[in-house]
Image (cartoon, rainbow, N blue to C red; front, side, top):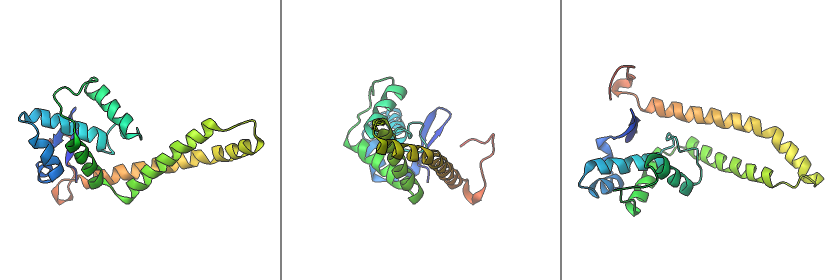
Length: 174
């Protein structure tokens, strides 16, 4: 289910999204619906695992990056509040799969391993041996995580087929 579709430099909202309370509440915050769509773009950039910002694992850092890169450092007319956060959580919940949950946990663990390697005491023989052992295993782990990421994105692409199982042609719109 793709409630938000990033296409041609804009986030489009599937009308079905407005039947979900969390998204409807965001929609109702604004008289100007272009501003509501801009907030949906924020929600998508922060909450979607297919967003270009999904690789930023720290949620607060991801939010700051989105505001800085997408909105030029200022949210302008957007009223980011609890309703926004609820909508982000709902988007994450709706797109969650066991594979995606495992990937997120694995990426967090990999980030902790990176910190462990950075903080290792190389003067200690015990730490040095453990570090060498760890470093030899990490490349295989990274390859496995990349394969899992590709599989998740492939599943998402298969889930966005047109009715009847037909795929959208290269020159077809929406």
